[in-house]
Image (cartoon, rainbow, N blue to C red; front, side):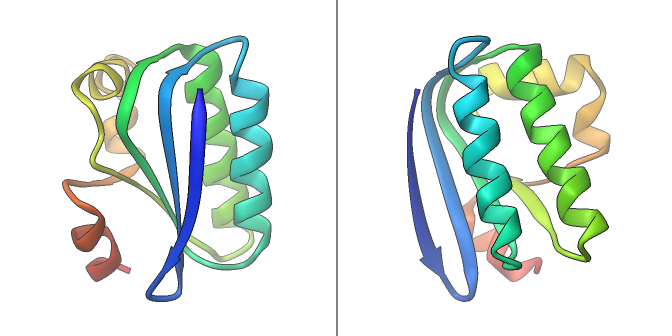
Length: 109
């Protein structure tokens, strides 16, 4: 898994690529929680994620809960088909705000 963090229009955009699995999810968790701690809206770009397992999903859920407790927001944007399938199976597509593009995510903030 690789990641990139950029700032756009007052929000942090965290882009992951590759596999977010048991091996890489601790890094994903750390990255997401550090971004949430910056008290800015966080958009998680999953467009380049080939595979995500339950540990990766758990990192997303924990980050969402942490953001909400702090009065912040965390959105998923450009979710790959593979990641969306897992989110839908877990019915988390009803929990997360999911936007088709980064621009749609920024507009929804």
